[in-house]
Image 1 (tube, rainbow, N blue to C red):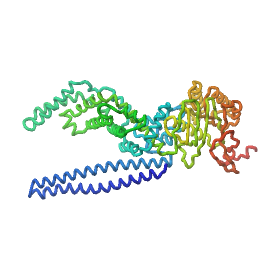
Image 2: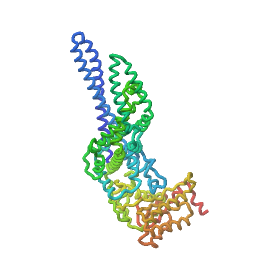
Image 3: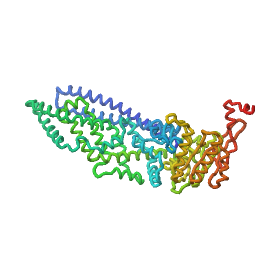
Image 4: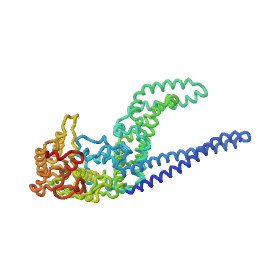
Length: 599
């Protein structure tokens, strides 16, 4: 992606902001002149002609209202444009650093003992999720995390790819739904809670006697108010006493509804805007058509229903407003009328809430992946096949490495029952290569584009053993933790599940003899059960397995060139076994006196 694209958008938005601010300075002056003019001219003209004075004042007050409306509209547009500037500045930053700080980094989605997420840096700071995520709702964040946590089936992958392709170039539409969420800081974004709330009947549900009573008493209160003005206030006081008693006995139920629904109006407004933007489009891809059909209904559009609920909750949030309590609620049952209207809404539409939130999650997750595709036009959508096992990838690179530093590789594996042993010197690129393969396979099976020129891959679950740590809480050593991870991998293999295994320097926590024996036994076991995997190791003796198990074990390596004490890495994978190692040179550079070994 050309960085100038986002730079130009930022500049265009800044220009629009300056024009709107300039216009608002004029509108501020016009508002002031209209307000002062209405007051002054009214009193100047009044002694000569009352009708003329009223007419001039009315015109100026109308002018004041006009300029207030224009000013408010511009202010809303300025806020929108400032968020769009922030969004595009974040895109620039993300292209330059692979780090986005504007959205959730997904650290809450990291699961202990997940087959691959920790080793492949799927979630958390400087993660794949943070690179991709452009979701503003919890529904969207959850759905995107689910995409990256497990492979989808092939029909779903194909549908997602086409939807992402359709959304890719709709940058104004995509950024527009983002700015809605960024403008309103969500205080209570808990769609699961709201979905469950929508399914449960209200405490007032079916209480027709109470509903009829407050309707009649409200009409009587209106009549008593007029009666108090012209005749006597006694009937009004009697009604006030009765009304307060009714509200007192229903206050606990009202508080239950209030506390379950309160402060969610902003969340619902954002969700309504996202759905409105989505429903306004004529989509072509099957996935987006399915979502739109899922949102369709026979009466009102989904966003109108959500907006209605948002408005009712917003009105309910006035229950602690002193003016509302003293002058509206006490006489006219303001809160109880709202509670019955909310109950009526829940009865009609409560079961649909979960469906709306699921749709929003899909929309945002697909939009995030479309943004990834837009930002990286040289990435490709892979072909995913059911046949186990195939991997053909051309110019594959790691998504988190900048293009200027990224070294890409072509690679091919065919199985099942094939293990590639990858040898190489320290820092030659073995671990990064395994992660490159793993991340791109995960992206491919989520429906996302991959960091490669071409890719064909079988539908598999990636399983890794790379970054093993001690666990003080569970009182286990890193060696035991690794054994547990390998056991987890073997469970997949023995159950004949389609998996791609990525193992980096296995059994590192034991002595070299046991490590060699155990590693060799593990590789033979993987072949026995028709597993597919890459094993990175410094143990060159494992390379003899290629001769012992021809057609099942193949050797690959990363080479270095040494010129005196200078090391040169090309990070290119090759067929064969590594012959050159750099540990003595690196240790010498760190100050270790290697000549003392022979002393």
